[in-house]
Amino acid sequence: MSTLSRFFSHLKEQDTEIPVYRGDWPDWWSDGVSSTPMQTQIFKDAQRILRKIKRLDPEQRIVSHQELQGIEQQLVMYAEHTWGFHASVHTPWHWNVQMLEVRKLAYAANASRLAHGALDKVKNALGGSLLRPGRAFRYRVVNTEQQTSKQLVDFEWDGFENERFKDGMEVIDENTGQVVPHQSGNQLVTIEVELQPEEEKQYFIRPVKTSIAKTTSNIKLVGADTVYDIEDMHPSGGEARDAFVISQFAVESPYVKICWNEEGIMSWVNKATGDDLIRGDRKHGAFTPVYEWTKTDGQADPGSIYAVRSGMGRNRKGLNVNRSAGRLVKAKIASNGPLFGVMELQFETHGMSFYSVFLKLYAASSRVDVAVRFHKDSVWEPENVYISLPFTSGVPNGETLWLDKPGANVRPWVDQLPGTLLDYYCIQEGLAYVDENRSLMIATPDTPLVQLGSLEYGKRLLHTQQSEETERHLYVWAMSNYWETNFKATLGGFYEFRYFVKWSEDISSAEQAIGQCRAMSSGFTVWRIQAES
Image 1 (cartoon, one colour):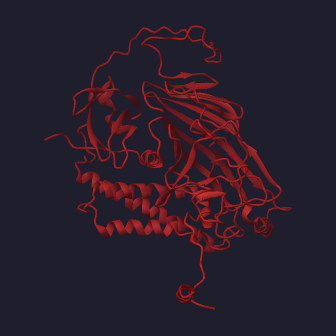
Image 2: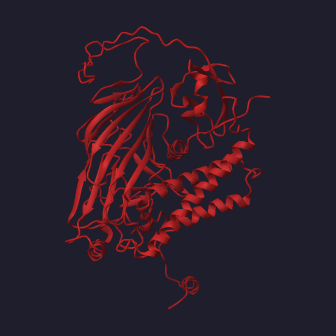
Image 3: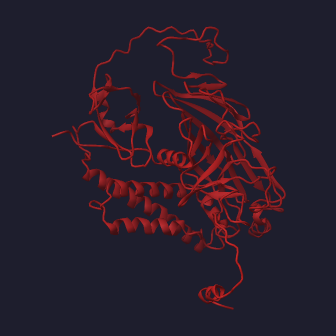
């Protein structure tokens, strides 16, 4: 028996040559975040807001060091790995279970409250306009990240101000005086902005009277039932052509064509190169849900609920696991305009009463924003929810997968210590497939766990035990209640998880690619400011 300090003092005195290893040490204990996915989402947002505060107020003239420490303390307490009272799964009604669950989740809520309050304080000190009648429709946009980025930004206003724009509007770049293309929404208008690191721009909106009358010529083969399921014989051309071509089977922008069938999204073609950005050896379509449920022996009661979990080991599921993939049942247009178009894909899937994937395609960028929205059933038995991400940069034999880990970009199955796990990783803002000629980036702002090891029940592998033939498919491990100790017993509720997919022939390093993930996850900072004096 020895203390740690005495042990290492003894170790230093030995003459034996001790091998030295360098690499990541993936954490077996990071999976607790998937048992409280909504609160984890709020926590991660608060982390990004804190980063914005520090970059907008680097000398802490507006938000004090003490206030920043208060936010950080709440974040640290939520991130600590213990997720609840030890009886949380087999007796979820226990008083200590309820009490500690509320306390744990309160750390995320308090971090969010303090962070957003501090950001409001910064915005107000930097010319922000408080709510009042007659205030100017003037907005500032700032890139607080360290990468040049092009983003869609929303300028919002209050409901009582809608009357100002009943006849139309224009968005003006203050620096150039030029009218900026826009797309109108409900109490907001969207424009596209490109900013260098720490660059800012200002815009204002002015009412104008615009004519809504126009002459159209529609030669699309859309039936009287509004179903568009026949290829056009004479594609439209010229200036009147839509930015997006949408049918029951595909959606197409100037940069990408995405196709689907009942199994989900099967093709994601980069139109600049002709490459399909979805792997040919995929097991499931892009953003298809994969649901796992392990049945208890007999009736679901505290004893069997505990017993079925205690024998799972590192598989996080039983030998008798039921696994099923969602089935695409409906596709419909959600919106279509000059800057972006949105398609909704509805799935039927076990464990959920609703699951929809919203694809937001950009008219002027090789980027698609994805929102996965669902209503999860409350299930006491052990279960897992995965979301398939079978992407590639287009050169699967030459690309390298990089993960955004704390303090470093890491190649999973390469930059890690021997004997560490290969199944899942806890990442920060995203991941990227990087080749010397192109990259594909996926920002994951809400769901930090990604799965690389096989979903099948079986012997788990550790680093150095894998081979070239070892199965490796990428999923988000979005939800789980599998562990018999500490995890929240039920995952039931409403959720939305976001993913931002971008591809480029101009990005060829991990630093650039992961930087883009951070920029997409963070988004530009936008706020309404006072009129010029």
